[in-house]
Length: 306
Image (cartoon, rainbow, N blue to C red; front, side, top):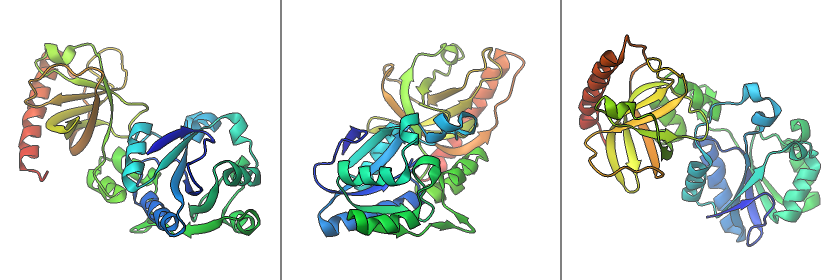
């Protein structure tokens, strides 16, 4: 899949889907599936347009949601779904001020859009004034096909990124998997930490995730490095026993005996929630708790389905 910035055109006229695609959940998958059908029927390039940063990070920073996945993971999931080009639009104040109709004209003229696939609640343009009704008016005028995809339901709710976040914040991992259509997984590059885990006898990989994942606590997890996987004890939180209070994502890979992998990409998949973070009286008590967590991880993961 090609990843291009802003208005770089696809290699041929495009069928396009637009959104943040945070999580690439079942609702997104419904849109992408319809997009691939439309692209195949008209020999169009299946393409997606997303935004960096999240629009709310610019427009209402206090309301910016926790990020489910980073851009790298998003691109990989979109590629696996069949998208051939991902345009990453820099979300600036100038872009946010584009009138909705002008935005659609630019999609047609600069990205070669011949089909647009959108969800029922799609909103776009300055002040989010653009909607499906506007698109229905513009489609024949500008010469593109509009396909509106119905929402995907999960019980009484519409599948949406905020629903996935709520499930993860409540540590309802099975519920999150139901909404995503797969187990939740996130990751980042491994960087240097304070080596406290190594001193306590449980060396950890410090995963630098671009954002703040929505879950908090201690988990039994699967960690993937390249094409290999390990059972892992995963901690996501502020480490209340240790001064500093910074958010850290740390994974202790059970039975890993290889070299350090600083700079490598590590993906972690929380499988079971063990407990919330706790503040201990000191490092000996923390060490004892980690040992119990590792034993519990080993027990749960050895009995779990792959």
